[in-house]
Image 1: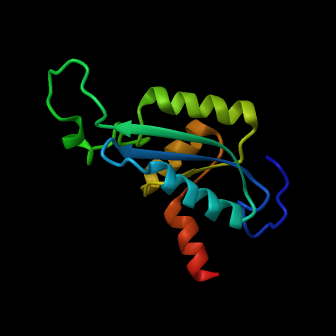
Image 2 (image 1 turned 180 degrees about the vertical axis):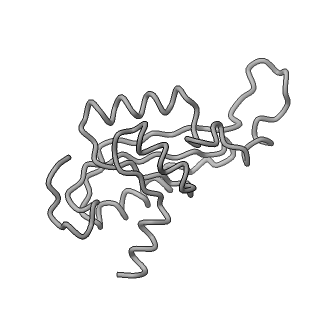
Image 3 (image 1 turned 120 degrees about the horizontal axis):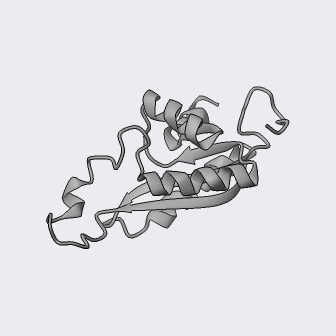
Length: 136
């Protein structure tokens, strides 16, 4: 782990990646990522990557209609995303010595714990950053 400028804020001086699970219906997901990046930068972080998982974008085999209808169900209850996407992000985090992953989506305590273990870095949600802004 890198040395942070402010011991009280683990995001100050941290290299972070942004991650989001978005519905195929949400066309302006990049705006939400930009807003999250601005919050991270305000906390002193450097955003070095963005990862997007789209849900309900297609149903290749047409066996089950409407992937978008299943949007409320995460790909994996433990990681929120597909296994392939988590592996991709974990590899990138290791290769770039990432300090934290910030998710656009709200995360449960179990998801945070599992993601931190798999990604090898601290895990936050956008809610954490907005709550800090209101408190500070």
